[in-house]
Length: 70
Image (tube, rainbow, N blue to C red; front, side, top):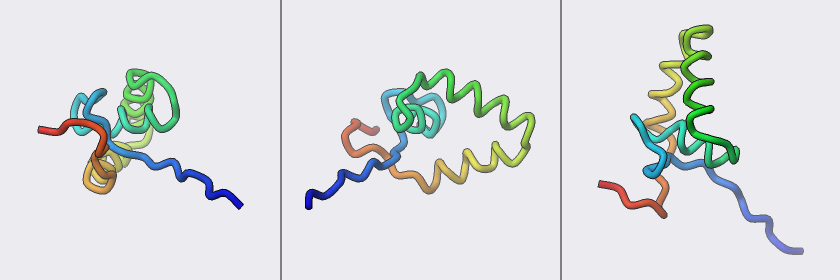
């Protein structure tokens, strides 16, 4: 039986504004990073812990090893 390739989420350096979390989520989901950023900002206004979750994700989600990081 063949092994399934595990899809992992990484922070993006290509589509990065602050920490690369939204760019990484957009890459994982297969959508536009601007849409993810907009949804995250609107979600943070409606649910204030959303901003804290962004910073927690910034600490926990690893950098994409395929991207060049400074």
